[in-house]
Length: 368
Image 1 (cartoon, rainbow, N blue to C red):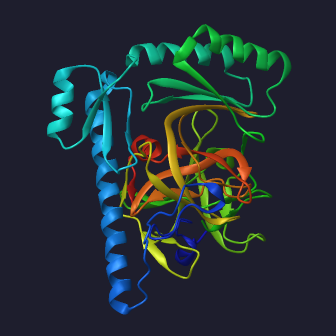
Image 2: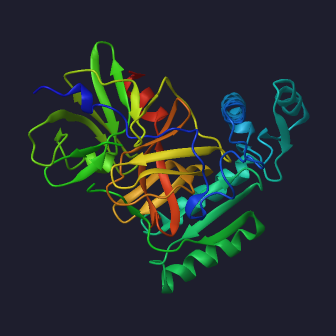
């Protein structure tokens, strides 16, 4: 088997693109109130966009580092509407540490232990009930529980009853459509029937791989760059779904550390990182190309019809069947792999992503 290097690139897109189409984000990623069409004005606008992107990248990275440092003493972090990193804390000492690090501390209204008990109860009660899911909202110290259109009758009554028992600590949200994995289908990758999307090129020592969705890797062993199997890409060597949703595909030739922007250009990916609530992010897949939005939650649990997946990133980014495995990113930082969601890219929806940091750590991988 000989993998073709020209095809081994991630299907993601450039961050310096206007966001907010299809109702995903209010406004655009970068707002210029008075357009200046002169060369100097365009250059100044581009410089402002880059500066704004750099500030948010820095805020997200700082929030992620502080969250990791605090561990069980925080209910999470987020980037607020002003672009500031906000980290929840439980005591004055931690608040001082967060402030000295350059972030905004916020006392959590409910302890992390209380929120963890609520999510544990939900997991015990509703794992296996397709169309349900939940995540902690660090901005409100509440647990958001969602149900899709498939949850009706007795199941819906059970969810509501459980939520009422937890009082104000739980907020219920209805999701239009049905939560589903986006299987069959960056750059397209083909199996024996299914079509999915290429995630990120990675390495382990001298060996080369790429990442895609686990629900794709579970059913495909040999991947090709074309529907007819004439252009081999690689072989699935590890796959995890449900529980997680990632797969590792080994190739014979290293892929470029650049990604398909679906506009004739490429964006370099230099590192893997953690998503933060409130971050503006982009996703690319072989069905819909570029889509943009914001992170709504991290460490989310979703009960898909095929099984339960935990630790996911919830976003306002749209996706459709065939986008599975496609890359979620911010700037040159890899964040996640497309798992599933509801809606489409005409009316919008929610999409969930497997954090890329988990397979990177589990398999000892580096961005290629």
